[in-house]
Amino acid sequence: MKQTATLRLPLLFLMVVLLTVTGLSAPAAARPADVDLRARVEAVPGMRVLGERPADPGQTVLDLAYRQPTDHRRPGQGFFDQRLTLVHKSTRRPVVLYSGGYDLGTSPQRPSEPTRLLDANQVTTEQRFFGESRPEGADWSTLTIWQAASDHHRLITALKAVYDGAWISTGGSKGGMTAVYHRRFYPNDVAGTVAYAAPNNTDDRDDSAYDARLEQIGSADCRAALTSVQREALIRRQAMTERYGRWAEAGAHGFQTIGGVDRAFELAVLRLPMMFWMHQPAGSCASIPTTGTTDDPLYDWIAKVTRLPAYTDRTLAAYGPYFYQLGTQLGYPQFTSPHLDGLLRHPGIQEVRSYVPRDIDLRFQPAAMKDVDRWVRHRGSSLMFVNGENDLATAEPFRLGSGTHDSFLFNVPEANHHVSIAGLRADEAQQATATLRRWAGLVN
Image 1 (cartoon, rainbow, N blue to C red):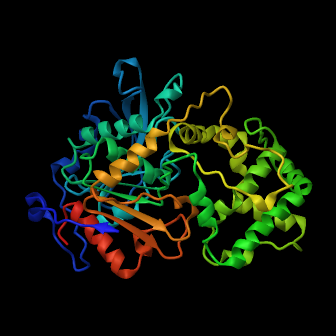
Image 2 (image 1 turned 90 degrees about the vertical axis):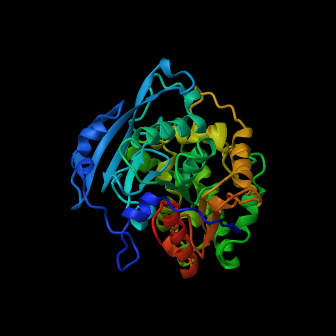
Protein backbone atom coordinates (compact mmCIF):
# COMPACT_ATOMS: atom_id res chain seq x y z
CA MET A 1 0.00 0.00 0.00
CA LYS A 2 1.39 3.39 -0.85
CA GLN A 3 0.22 6.96 -0.86
CA THR A 4 1.93 9.78 -2.67
CA ALA A 5 1.63 13.52 -3.03
CA THR A 6 3.68 16.12 -4.88
CA LEU A 7 5.67 18.45 -2.65
CA ARG A 8 6.87 21.90 -3.66
CA LEU A 9 10.67 22.03 -3.81
CA PRO A 10 12.21 24.88 -1.83
CA LEU A 11 13.56 27.62 -4.08
CA LEU A 12 16.90 27.49 -2.25
CA PHE A 13 17.63 24.00 -3.50
CA LEU A 14 16.51 24.76 -7.05
CA MET A 15 19.13 27.49 -7.09
CA VAL A 16 22.09 25.66 -5.57
CA VAL A 17 21.76 21.96 -6.48
CA LEU A 18 23.69 20.81 -9.56
CA LEU A 19 23.13 17.44 -11.23
CA THR A 20 25.91 15.14 -12.30
CA VAL A 21 25.66 12.70 -15.17
CA THR A 22 24.77 9.97 -12.67
CA GLY A 23 21.72 11.87 -11.50
CA LEU A 24 23.16 12.52 -8.04
CA SER A 25 23.80 16.05 -6.88
CA ALA A 26 27.35 17.34 -6.97
CA PRO A 27 28.82 18.43 -3.63
CA ALA A 28 28.22 22.08 -2.91
CA ALA A 29 31.25 24.35 -3.07
CA ALA A 30 32.83 25.26 0.24
CA ARG A 31 31.99 28.60 1.78
CA PRO A 32 33.24 30.30 4.93
CA ALA A 33 30.70 28.42 7.05
CA ASP A 34 32.37 25.17 5.99
CA VAL A 35 35.89 26.43 6.57
CA ASP A 36 35.21 27.38 10.20
CA LEU A 37 33.04 24.32 10.88
CA ARG A 38 34.65 23.42 14.18
CA ALA A 39 34.19 26.92 15.53
CA ARG A 40 30.53 26.98 14.45
CA VAL A 41 29.84 23.61 16.04
CA GLU A 42 31.58 24.60 19.27
CA ALA A 43 29.47 27.76 19.32
CA VAL A 44 26.28 25.68 19.62
CA PRO A 45 25.19 25.97 23.27
CA GLY A 46 25.79 22.70 25.08
CA MET A 47 27.99 21.20 22.33
CA ARG A 48 31.57 20.04 22.90
CA VAL A 49 34.06 18.77 20.32
CA LEU A 50 35.74 15.67 21.73
CA GLY A 51 38.03 14.99 18.82
CA GLU A 52 38.48 14.69 15.09
CA ARG A 53 38.75 11.45 13.13
CA PRO A 54 40.65 10.79 9.91
CA ALA A 55 38.33 11.56 7.01
CA ASP A 56 38.03 11.13 3.26
CA PRO A 57 38.89 14.16 1.10
CA GLY A 58 36.16 16.77 1.25
CA GLN A 59 34.90 15.57 4.65
CA THR A 60 35.41 16.44 8.29
CA VAL A 61 34.55 13.92 11.00
CA LEU A 62 34.03 15.20 14.54
CA ASP A 63 33.21 13.29 17.71
CA LEU A 64 30.86 15.41 19.78
CA ALA A 65 29.04 15.50 23.10
CA TYR A 66 25.76 17.40 23.46
CA ARG A 67 24.40 18.31 26.87
CA GLN A 68 20.89 16.90 27.34
CA PRO A 69 18.49 17.13 30.28
CA THR A 70 18.13 13.84 32.09
CA ASP A 71 14.40 14.57 32.18
CA HIS A 72 13.02 16.89 29.51
CA ARG A 73 9.94 17.55 31.64
CA ARG A 74 12.21 18.76 34.48
CA PRO A 75 15.24 20.26 32.72
CA GLY A 76 16.71 21.60 35.93
CA GLN A 77 17.02 18.17 37.54
CA GLY A 78 20.31 17.19 35.95
CA PHE A 79 22.07 16.65 32.63
CA PHE A 80 24.11 14.10 30.72
CA ASP A 81 26.29 14.21 27.63
CA GLN A 82 24.81 12.50 24.57
CA ARG A 83 27.59 11.24 22.33
CA LEU A 84 27.39 11.73 18.58
CA THR A 85 29.60 11.72 15.51
CA LEU A 86 29.29 14.29 12.73
CA VAL A 87 30.42 13.54 9.18
CA HIS A 88 30.47 16.93 7.50
CA LYS A 89 30.55 17.66 3.79
CA SER A 90 28.87 21.03 3.38
CA THR A 91 26.51 23.21 5.39
CA ARG A 92 24.31 23.40 2.29
CA ARG A 93 23.94 19.64 1.83
CA PRO A 94 21.10 17.65 3.43
CA VAL A 95 21.73 16.15 6.85
CA VAL A 96 20.90 12.53 7.71
CA LEU A 97 20.22 11.78 11.36
CA TYR A 98 21.18 8.14 11.85
CA SER A 99 20.69 6.00 14.92
CA GLY A 100 21.40 2.33 15.41
CA GLY A 101 19.16 2.47 18.47
CA TYR A 102 21.95 1.60 20.90
CA ASP A 103 25.46 2.97 21.42
CA LEU A 104 27.60 4.62 18.76
CA GLY A 105 29.20 1.36 17.68
CA THR A 106 32.71 0.99 16.34
CA SER A 107 32.22 2.88 13.05
CA PRO A 108 29.87 5.83 13.65
CA GLN A 109 31.41 7.59 10.65
CA ARG A 110 30.17 4.88 8.26
CA PRO A 111 27.57 6.41 5.91
CA SER A 112 24.04 5.05 5.97
CA GLU A 113 22.30 4.27 2.70
CA PRO A 114 20.30 7.55 2.68
CA THR A 115 23.54 9.44 3.33
CA ARG A 116 25.15 7.84 0.28
CA LEU A 117 22.10 8.37 -1.93
CA LEU A 118 21.88 12.04 -0.98
CA ASP A 119 25.60 12.80 -0.74
CA ALA A 120 24.62 14.18 2.65
CA ASN A 121 26.16 15.10 5.94
CA GLN A 122 25.48 12.56 8.68
CA VAL A 123 24.91 12.86 12.41
CA THR A 124 25.11 9.49 14.18
CA THR A 125 23.65 9.49 17.68
CA GLU A 126 24.10 7.31 20.72
CA GLN A 127 20.86 6.74 22.59
CA ARG A 128 20.35 7.74 26.21
CA PHE A 129 21.49 5.10 28.71
CA PHE A 130 23.62 3.33 26.08
CA GLY A 131 27.40 3.40 25.78
CA GLU A 132 28.78 6.57 27.36
CA SER A 133 25.49 8.49 27.14
CA ARG A 134 24.36 7.51 30.62
CA PRO A 135 22.70 9.95 33.03
CA GLU A 136 24.17 9.99 36.51
CA GLY A 137 22.16 7.99 39.00
CA ALA A 138 20.49 5.99 36.19
CA ASP A 139 16.87 6.91 36.90
CA TRP A 140 15.42 4.27 34.58
CA SER A 141 12.03 6.00 34.53
CA THR A 142 13.53 8.61 32.17
CA LEU A 143 14.31 5.93 29.57
CA THR A 144 11.18 6.34 27.43
CA ILE A 145 10.54 6.81 23.74
CA TRP A 146 9.37 10.38 24.39
CA GLN A 147 12.52 11.32 26.30
CA ALA A 148 14.72 9.85 23.54
CA ALA A 149 12.67 11.63 20.87
CA SER A 150 13.13 14.87 22.80
CA ASP A 151 16.90 14.28 22.77
CA HIS A 152 16.79 14.17 18.97
CA HIS A 153 14.49 17.18 18.81
CA ARG A 154 16.86 19.35 20.86
CA LEU A 155 19.87 18.15 18.89
CA ILE A 156 18.32 18.84 15.48
CA THR A 157 17.07 22.24 16.62
CA ALA A 158 20.57 23.13 17.81
CA LEU A 159 22.35 21.97 14.63
CA LYS A 160 19.94 23.74 12.31
CA ALA A 161 21.91 26.85 13.29
CA VAL A 162 24.83 25.28 11.41
CA TYR A 163 23.17 23.45 8.53
CA ASP A 164 20.87 24.92 5.91
CA GLY A 165 19.85 21.69 4.17
CA ALA A 166 16.85 19.46 4.78
CA TRP A 167 17.03 16.76 7.44
CA ILE A 168 16.26 13.06 6.92
CA SER A 169 16.13 10.52 9.74
CA THR A 170 16.94 6.85 9.39
CA GLY A 171 17.92 3.69 11.20
CA GLY A 172 17.58 -0.06 11.07
CA SER A 173 15.75 -2.39 13.46
CA LYS A 174 15.64 -0.57 16.83
CA GLY A 175 17.22 2.43 15.10
CA GLY A 176 14.31 2.46 12.64
CA MET A 177 11.86 2.26 15.51
CA THR A 178 13.69 5.16 17.19
CA ALA A 179 13.32 7.28 14.04
CA VAL A 180 9.57 6.60 13.85
CA TYR A 181 9.04 7.40 17.54
CA HIS A 182 10.86 10.70 17.08
CA ARG A 183 8.55 11.57 14.20
CA ARG A 184 5.47 10.71 16.23
CA PHE A 185 6.32 13.35 18.85
CA TYR A 186 8.15 15.87 16.65
CA PRO A 187 6.77 15.30 13.13
CA ASN A 188 8.23 18.47 11.64
CA ASP A 189 11.84 18.07 12.75
CA VAL A 190 12.83 16.25 9.56
CA ALA A 191 11.56 16.18 5.99
CA GLY A 192 11.36 12.40 5.79
CA THR A 193 12.19 9.12 7.53
CA VAL A 194 13.52 5.82 6.19
CA ALA A 195 12.97 3.00 8.71
CA TYR A 196 14.58 -0.32 7.85
CA ALA A 197 13.33 -3.61 9.38
CA ALA A 198 11.44 -1.82 12.16
CA PRO A 199 9.10 -4.01 14.28
CA ASN A 200 5.76 -2.64 15.47
CA ASN A 201 4.57 -4.75 18.40
CA THR A 202 1.24 -3.07 19.12
CA ASP A 203 -0.13 -5.71 21.51
CA ASP A 204 2.49 -7.42 23.65
CA ARG A 205 -0.11 -9.89 24.94
CA ASP A 206 -0.77 -11.30 21.46
CA ASP A 207 2.21 -12.79 19.64
CA SER A 208 0.20 -14.98 17.27
CA ALA A 209 1.47 -13.05 14.26
CA TYR A 210 4.99 -14.28 14.97
CA ASP A 211 3.90 -17.90 15.29
CA ALA A 212 1.90 -17.59 12.07
CA ARG A 213 4.87 -16.08 10.26
CA LEU A 214 7.04 -18.98 11.38
CA GLU A 215 4.67 -21.30 9.55
CA GLN A 216 5.07 -19.33 6.31
CA ILE A 217 8.74 -18.39 6.01
CA GLY A 218 10.94 -20.45 3.72
CA SER A 219 10.22 -23.98 2.59
CA ALA A 220 8.45 -26.68 4.58
CA ASP A 221 11.67 -28.69 4.61
CA CYS A 222 13.64 -25.77 6.06
CA ARG A 223 11.06 -25.13 8.77
CA ALA A 224 11.04 -28.83 9.66
CA ALA A 225 14.83 -28.82 9.89
CA LEU A 226 14.73 -25.91 12.34
CA THR A 227 12.20 -27.56 14.63
CA SER A 228 14.25 -30.76 14.47
CA VAL A 229 17.50 -29.01 15.44
CA GLN A 230 15.73 -27.30 18.33
CA ARG A 231 14.64 -30.70 19.64
CA GLU A 232 18.07 -32.16 19.10
CA ALA A 233 19.69 -29.30 21.03
CA LEU A 234 17.47 -29.95 24.05
CA ILE A 235 17.75 -33.73 23.82
CA ARG A 236 21.52 -33.20 24.07
CA ARG A 237 21.13 -30.45 26.66
CA GLN A 238 23.82 -31.81 28.99
CA ALA A 239 26.49 -31.96 26.30
CA MET A 240 25.50 -28.53 24.96
CA THR A 241 25.40 -26.76 28.34
CA GLU A 242 28.73 -28.29 29.35
CA ARG A 243 30.33 -26.69 26.29
CA TYR A 244 28.50 -23.43 26.90
CA GLY A 245 29.61 -23.41 30.53
CA ARG A 246 33.26 -24.12 29.68
CA TRP A 247 33.26 -21.28 27.16
CA ALA A 248 31.69 -18.91 29.69
CA GLU A 249 34.13 -19.88 32.45
CA ALA A 250 37.14 -19.43 30.19
CA GLY A 251 36.04 -15.89 29.34
CA ALA A 252 34.76 -14.95 32.81
CA HIS A 253 31.18 -14.73 31.55
CA GLY A 254 28.44 -15.23 34.13
CA PHE A 255 24.73 -16.02 34.03
CA GLN A 256 23.55 -14.37 37.23
CA THR A 257 20.89 -12.23 35.52
CA ILE A 258 19.25 -15.06 33.57
CA GLY A 259 19.81 -17.52 36.38
CA GLY A 260 22.27 -20.10 35.12
CA VAL A 261 23.72 -21.69 32.03
CA ASP A 262 20.82 -24.15 31.65
CA ARG A 263 18.24 -21.36 31.61
CA ALA A 264 20.34 -19.31 29.18
CA PHE A 265 20.70 -22.24 26.79
CA GLU A 266 16.99 -23.06 26.84
CA LEU A 267 16.14 -19.43 26.09
CA ALA A 268 18.60 -19.41 23.19
CA VAL A 269 17.03 -22.55 21.73
CA LEU A 270 13.54 -21.06 21.95
CA ARG A 271 14.74 -17.97 20.07
CA LEU A 272 16.72 -19.97 17.51
CA PRO A 273 14.18 -19.77 14.62
CA MET A 274 13.86 -16.00 15.04
CA MET A 275 17.62 -15.50 15.04
CA PHE A 276 18.01 -17.80 12.04
CA TRP A 277 15.48 -15.99 9.87
CA MET A 278 16.67 -12.56 10.98
CA HIS A 279 20.39 -12.95 10.36
CA GLN A 280 21.30 -15.98 8.27
CA PRO A 281 21.78 -15.34 4.54
CA ALA A 282 19.76 -16.95 1.79
CA GLY A 283 20.71 -20.56 1.23
CA SER A 284 21.51 -21.20 4.89
CA CYS A 285 18.86 -23.90 5.24
CA ALA A 286 21.37 -26.37 3.84
CA SER A 287 23.66 -25.67 6.82
CA ILE A 288 21.15 -26.73 9.49
CA PRO A 289 22.58 -29.76 11.37
CA THR A 290 20.77 -33.08 11.14
CA THR A 291 20.12 -35.59 13.92
CA GLY A 292 23.30 -37.42 12.92
CA THR A 293 25.54 -34.41 13.55
CA THR A 294 28.01 -34.93 16.38
CA ASP A 295 28.02 -32.71 19.47
CA ASP A 296 30.82 -30.30 18.58
CA PRO A 297 29.53 -29.13 15.17
CA LEU A 298 25.99 -29.03 16.54
CA TYR A 299 27.08 -26.77 19.38
CA ASP A 300 29.17 -24.58 17.07
CA TRP A 301 26.21 -24.03 14.75
CA ILE A 302 23.83 -23.23 17.61
CA ALA A 303 26.36 -20.85 19.15
CA LYS A 304 26.76 -19.00 15.86
CA VAL A 305 23.08 -18.76 14.95
CA THR A 306 21.71 -17.92 18.39
CA ARG A 307 24.69 -15.74 19.36
CA LEU A 308 25.14 -17.46 22.71
CA PRO A 309 27.26 -14.64 24.22
CA ALA A 310 24.09 -12.50 24.14
CA TYR A 311 22.74 -14.26 27.24
CA THR A 312 25.69 -13.60 29.55
CA ASP A 313 25.86 -10.94 32.23
CA ARG A 314 28.49 -8.97 30.35
CA THR A 315 26.34 -8.55 27.25
CA LEU A 316 23.14 -8.00 29.21
CA ALA A 317 24.82 -5.20 31.16
CA ALA A 318 25.65 -3.40 27.91
CA TYR A 319 22.18 -3.99 26.46
CA GLY A 320 20.25 -3.66 29.69
CA PRO A 321 18.62 -0.40 28.53
CA TYR A 322 17.29 -2.21 25.45
CA PHE A 323 15.67 -4.96 27.49
CA TYR A 324 14.31 -2.37 29.91
CA GLN A 325 12.62 -0.64 26.99
CA LEU A 326 11.23 -3.96 25.77
CA GLY A 327 9.77 -4.60 29.19
CA THR A 328 8.26 -1.14 29.67
CA GLN A 329 7.11 0.11 26.27
CA LEU A 330 8.33 -1.73 23.16
CA GLY A 331 7.23 -5.27 23.91
CA TYR A 332 8.86 -8.47 22.66
CA PRO A 333 7.51 -11.70 21.14
CA GLN A 334 7.31 -15.03 22.86
CA PHE A 335 6.98 -18.13 20.71
CA THR A 336 4.78 -21.14 21.28
CA SER A 337 6.68 -24.41 21.04
CA PRO A 338 4.45 -27.49 21.08
CA HIS A 339 7.19 -29.40 19.23
CA LEU A 340 9.37 -29.04 22.34
CA ASP A 341 6.85 -30.51 24.80
CA GLY A 342 8.61 -32.59 27.40
CA LEU A 343 11.99 -30.98 26.72
CA LEU A 344 11.54 -27.59 28.40
CA ARG A 345 12.39 -26.98 32.05
CA HIS A 346 11.94 -23.27 32.68
CA PRO A 347 8.39 -21.90 32.30
CA GLY A 348 8.28 -18.19 31.59
CA ILE A 349 11.91 -18.01 30.49
CA GLN A 350 10.94 -15.98 27.41
CA GLU A 351 9.61 -13.12 29.56
CA VAL A 352 11.65 -9.91 29.24
CA ARG A 353 12.10 -10.09 33.01
CA SER A 354 14.67 -12.85 32.35
CA TYR A 355 17.04 -10.29 30.83
CA VAL A 356 16.75 -7.53 33.45
CA PRO A 357 18.13 -7.61 37.01
CA ARG A 358 15.40 -8.00 39.61
CA ASP A 359 16.28 -4.74 41.34
CA ILE A 360 15.14 -2.78 38.26
CA ASP A 361 11.41 -2.20 38.20
CA LEU A 362 9.56 -3.21 35.02
CA ARG A 363 6.05 -1.87 34.51
CA PHE A 364 4.73 -2.30 31.00
CA GLN A 365 2.87 0.59 29.36
CA PRO A 366 0.59 -1.01 26.77
CA ALA A 367 -0.61 2.31 25.35
CA ALA A 368 2.83 3.42 24.10
CA MET A 369 3.09 1.34 20.91
CA LYS A 370 -0.62 1.62 20.15
CA ASP A 371 -0.27 5.40 20.21
CA VAL A 372 2.63 5.35 17.73
CA ASP A 373 0.78 2.91 15.48
CA ARG A 374 -2.32 5.15 15.42
CA TRP A 375 -0.19 8.17 14.55
CA VAL A 376 1.42 6.35 11.61
CA ARG A 377 -1.94 5.19 10.23
CA HIS A 378 -3.91 8.39 10.82
CA ARG A 379 -1.43 11.29 10.78
CA GLY A 380 1.95 10.00 9.63
CA SER A 381 3.68 11.71 6.72
CA SER A 382 6.83 11.24 4.62
CA LEU A 383 7.60 7.80 6.07
CA MET A 384 9.32 4.97 4.22
CA PHE A 385 9.38 1.45 5.64
CA VAL A 386 11.75 -1.09 4.07
CA ASN A 387 11.31 -4.66 5.32
CA GLY A 388 12.66 -8.08 4.42
CA GLU A 389 10.28 -10.69 3.07
CA ASN A 390 11.76 -13.39 5.32
CA ASP A 391 12.37 -11.26 8.40
CA LEU A 392 10.55 -12.75 11.36
CA ALA A 393 11.21 -9.60 13.43
CA THR A 394 8.71 -7.66 11.31
CA ALA A 395 5.90 -10.18 11.57
CA GLU A 396 4.09 -7.19 13.05
CA PRO A 397 5.21 -4.35 10.76
CA PHE A 398 4.26 -0.71 10.63
CA ARG A 399 1.30 -0.31 8.27
CA LEU A 400 0.05 2.68 6.36
CA GLY A 401 -3.52 3.85 6.84
CA SER A 402 -6.13 6.11 5.31
CA GLY A 403 -4.61 9.13 7.05
CA THR A 404 -0.98 8.37 6.17
CA HIS A 405 0.39 10.89 3.68
CA ASP A 406 3.23 10.64 1.16
CA SER A 407 4.47 7.38 2.68
CA PHE A 408 5.61 4.00 1.39
CA LEU A 409 5.94 0.38 2.47
CA PHE A 410 8.46 -1.76 0.57
CA ASN A 411 9.41 -5.42 0.97
CA VAL A 412 12.79 -6.69 -0.21
CA PRO A 413 12.28 -10.10 -1.87
CA GLU A 414 13.67 -13.09 0.08
CA ALA A 415 15.61 -10.74 2.39
CA ASN A 416 16.22 -11.07 6.12
CA HIS A 417 16.63 -8.36 8.78
CA HIS A 418 19.47 -6.67 6.89
CA VAL A 419 17.74 -4.80 4.10
CA SER A 420 18.41 -1.87 1.82
CA ILE A 421 16.73 0.20 -0.87
CA ALA A 422 19.31 -1.26 -3.25
CA GLY A 423 17.85 -4.72 -2.59
CA LEU A 424 14.40 -3.76 -3.86
CA ARG A 425 13.17 -4.56 -7.35
CA ALA A 426 14.61 -2.06 -9.81
CA ASP A 427 11.41 -0.05 -10.23
CA GLU A 428 10.80 0.17 -6.48
CA ALA A 429 14.41 1.09 -5.78
CA GLN A 430 14.12 3.89 -8.32
CA GLN A 431 10.86 5.09 -6.76
CA ALA A 432 12.28 4.98 -3.23
CA THR A 433 15.42 6.85 -4.26
CA ALA A 434 13.46 9.52 -6.12
CA THR A 435 11.17 9.96 -3.12
CA LEU A 436 14.09 10.31 -0.74
CA ARG A 437 15.71 12.92 -2.95
CA ARG A 438 12.45 14.82 -3.21
CA TRP A 439 12.08 14.85 0.56
CA ALA A 440 15.63 16.16 0.84
CA GLY A 441 14.83 19.00 -1.53
CA LEU A 442 17.08 17.74 -4.35
CA VAL A 443 16.14 17.95 -8.00
CA ASN A 444 15.43 14.53 -9.52
